[in-house]
Image 1 (spheres, one colour):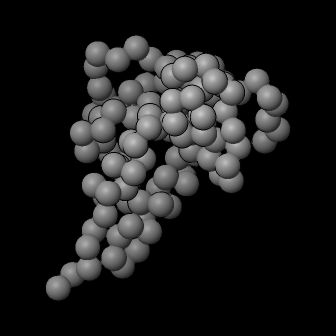
Image 2 (cartoon, rainbow, N blue to C red):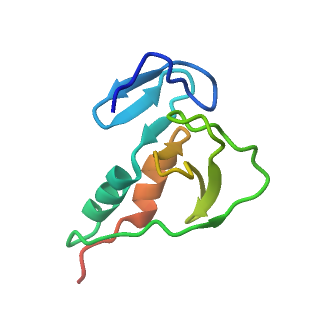
Image 3 (cartoon, rainbow, N blue to C red):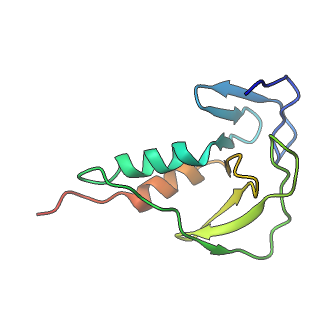
Length: 113
């Protein structure tokens, strides 16, 4: 998909920087990732690797952020105690600073003994 230079952080308005499949914010340290990439990362955290579904419940009390791709309001979903902002059009998931690492840590499945 073509990207112009107008993609900005939904949290602080700083221009997003392309970093492989992700786009990151140098201002607030947030990260924008396609949902499939997040599922792949979560799957790789399993021992042995296995599919992971990101199941959450609607979170309340947060102002919706605009999707960096379509600018429509995203929905906030609580996944394992982490509020994630997810584009309703499936463009991706916004992670505030440290949320991606926290989610992957909580999803990590240690080897069976």
